[in-house]
Length: 126
Image: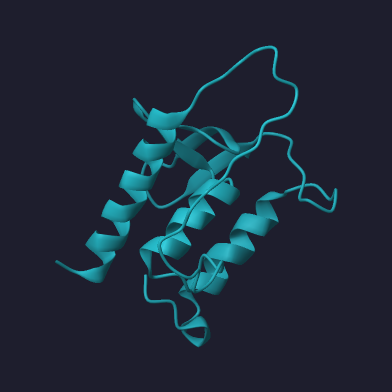
């Protein structure tokens, strides 16, 4: 089994575990999450991560265009998407969101991330 398949399997298991363990109480004002990890986080860089532990932590701390749901995928930061007739251009509409420093998340942030990932200098394995 390739390391990519192992990593993706680990991500799916982590997502299922969190879903199965969730409990919501409407009267609770503060929520704590205690997360035990079976290994060291190698990186939190989405372009460089190749291991299950890093992917698991990123899934639980970062928001992407979509998120996994019981129906497959549901919107994350993307509110909608359009694909060109030739299938080469994807246009995403983003919900208003901010980085932890208060600046707005923009389409350019996603463009930068994807360009960085595919740049040979980054040496991304995926």
